[in-house]
Length: 403
Image (cartoon, rainbow, N blue to C red; front, side, top):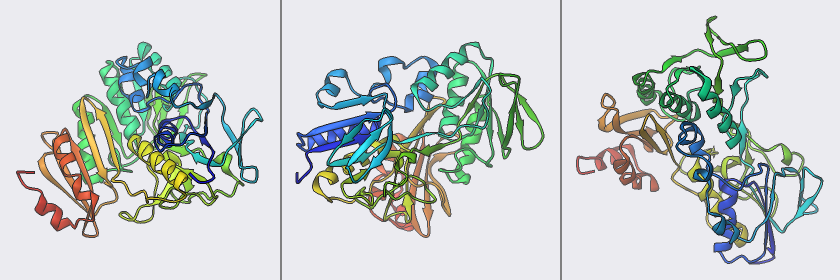
């Protein structure tokens, strides 16, 4: 394993855990130091906006590993400590308590943080950590209505959970359809109707201009001049990569996508420094430009690739078929590849009216994405079409009643 005798992992989430496991699985016996800003061992974030809020998944239900499996990794664990600065000359990560972690190799997996609305009023929440989810869940007990700002995946899942908890829900989205950033609007309209099917007051094409109240939020002011009364607000405004501690280190940051710029092997501009998960932006040959994925599946797969390539000093390019899912109103939404932007979209199984379908999405004559609602077997069988470049015509030819 060359000159790598010690590895530091900055980040104790999904990506950090998989990096540590992959190092051990590859036979690495050296010291692994894992640094995590939160006081918790790695846990699963997707349930926080779903089962956790409705009381069906708490405590051990979000743990990624049992204690025995985690302890078996033999980590030097630094929880409740954040990476403050990368010192490449010393080959060390400086922590917020002034201590340093020196290592021959580094995996950057510090992930991202919730984008916060510009208010300090009580009753306005974001949802990223387990503490965030606990605060929202506790607020559900006393609230009759929740205003959710942003109809991306987190906002949509919070709206679904709030309805399951019996709350009135107003869901606000500045774009013309939900999930606009990841789903083509021609398909996104189906998800607008899905919210309305379940009694959500969905308002599209209207932005939030401010929050009003005396100490605690009382109303949300909208761009059209109207306002929504609210004592509880959950803002799902996206996430920001945690890159501040890397400034001036020589690690190059990506432009439009944000995050840490990597090559196809997950390597950064610094020798022996790799990145994975929400924070990593890398070139994917299938989709062009840089890709940065805030997906549970990607965090694990990319961290494993980064760890293996760190030990090998290169290795295998990371070219996954992106995969993401969401559970809303008891229905599973699945996305393979990219669903936006697309210039062609066609439902090939089921129908939007039945809220059960598979849609193919194409760009420049090539298949780029597969989107399914309540159609898991069909979606996963079609995944092979994205494993290699497939033309739009060939994709349609492959889709038949037997598929």
